[in-house]
Image (cartoon, rainbow, N blue to C red; front, side, top):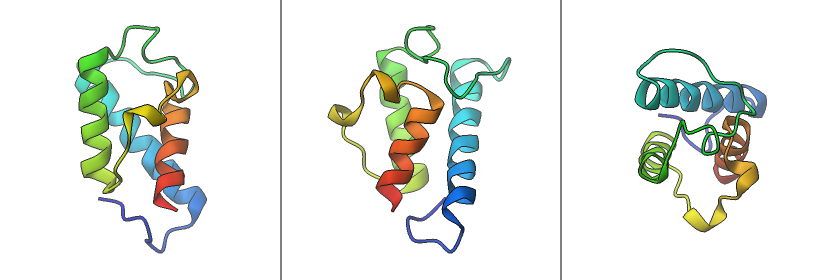
Length: 92
């Protein structure tokens, strides 16, 4: 679990968050097969649906100890990069 005020650099923390999110998405929604780009639209491409979105939010909240509000998500945050940025902003 990453903690909001850990001693890692912001850049290193962002990479760790992104890697964990990508790993979770590939493992949970893609049967551990294939890959995704940081800017791939997860909803439009069909990788994540509405139930998957709730699972992803739950994973983020428990893994990074970071509460998220569904209303904070936009089309721009429907990518690994967008989600990673939101999580990192919350962890600051």
